[in-house]
Amino acid sequence: MRHGQSYPTYNEGGPGRTKDEHVTSTELDVASLSDHVGVVARNWFVAVTALILGAGTALVLSLSQPTLYLAETVLAVSIPVSLQESMPLDRTEMTTQAKVVASDPVARRVIDELGLESSQRALLDNTEAEAETDSRVVRVSALQPTASGAAQVVNSFAQQYLQLRAESENEKQQLRIDVHTQQLADLAGEIELLRTLLTALRGQEAAETLRSVAVLESLQEQLAASMPVADTSSSSGGGEILRMATPPEAPTQPLPYRDSLLGAFVGLVLGILLCYPVDNRRRRRQRRRRLGGRAAGTRSSALTGTPGSGH
Image (cartoon, rainbow, N blue to C red; front, top):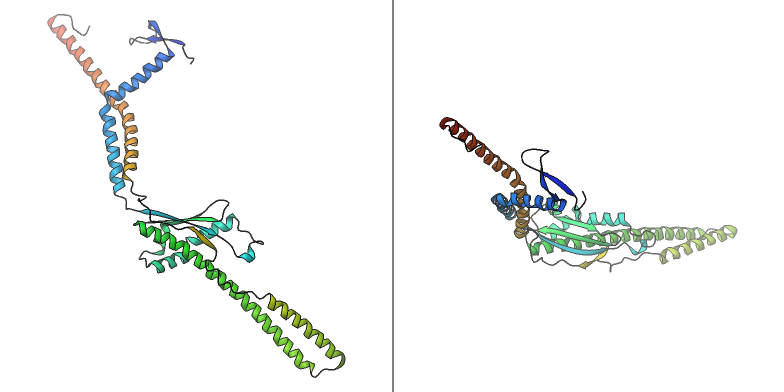
């Protein structure tokens, strides 16, 4: 349809009977818009009623929700220094560490630390840990009935995760120390055995035994030099807390003002849509009344012999 193109209009008597005047497409658009406005204006009570019902329903549903506060803490995840060059922390590992933050072992520690009465499953259902893309940052959030409780729970999750990582790293380090210690003890036993045998040996056999003792002593020195040391300074374990959570000022639910506005908007849209069938029904009733009035006038004219108003 081109702007400004003329179209013939038809009388209500039926198709094919055009009026003398023509209207443009712009005038048709204005007329169509005026028709829609007229439908809503004639049935404004339907739109207003739907708006009020939508806002009221949304308000009731909003106020029926339990009050919950959302708190968030941010922590940076790291890996042991000995593995940083050989095994960088990739996206998969970050996702795994985020799952560890919100896991049963950590939740168990949080419950014990804070003396919570909720179960591990209920606590984890209201706790979420998400790894940021292309970074070592994990965001931990928790929903709780009180603002202070939300901050305490989410901070405890971060702290207990770091403590769990620290204990795990210390256990691995202690295991490496124990292995080195056992190897040194085995070498010392072999050296002592060879020195004992050396007293009974002479000539070539004694020289070869001395060379073996020297090799074992050199190996013993190398193992002693590479002995891992327990790192008691890494109490934070696998990272650090970048931002501690603070008690939120407002709850995350319910939000009656926002919910009422959304309910009012939805109700208004539905109310406007309902205006059309209501208007059609009203117009059909009016048409039937007009036709009934004409029929009654026709019958009255036939009885009195006077022309009816319906002709």
